Image 1: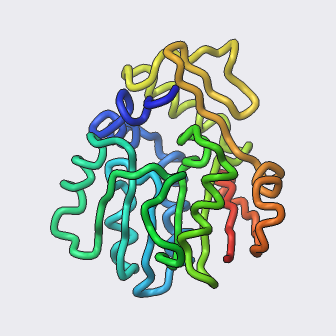
Image 2: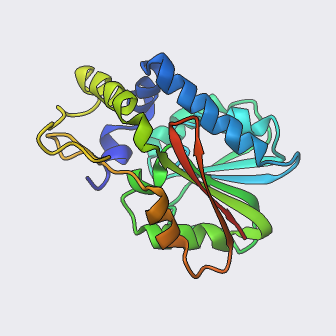
Length: 223
């Protein structure tokens, strides 16, 4: 699974996954972005972890003072460069989300949405602590994963991706309980409310768990 989004599911292939999404999944995308925008103040400095091909960066840029997107896929970043071309307050960097090359207190808001906390396949506790490190006191870190209520819609969307050859064939014997497994080694997990609370215990921050649109679970960490 290491490098799946970096090599196989990157750039135009990743973009295609979003282009073929059915209406209910598109509603989920919109709801997530709207929720994030509601947490941003005009002029805020935003860090987008796992920005991919830059999907949400133009939307964020219309409210933020600066949007920095990081990813470890060179191909995705090259496409993101085209997506944000002409948007003066967007920047890109090749970087690992658990080893951020930013000093502490660099951002007002750090976001890791669309189940990045699972898709990155890194130590989730380290990912959260590193995100908190780079956000200013009083700033907010936003992680999202899938709601259990969204399972059928999520499965429909992933089957469509598999049908187009964007993912491997889904292994239905191993798929279930929030986990999607493909026969080419792809695995997609989720993080539920209890796991979010477990990961954020003892961080000395205010933690809010919010279910949104019966599609997302947001963990909001106020530093």
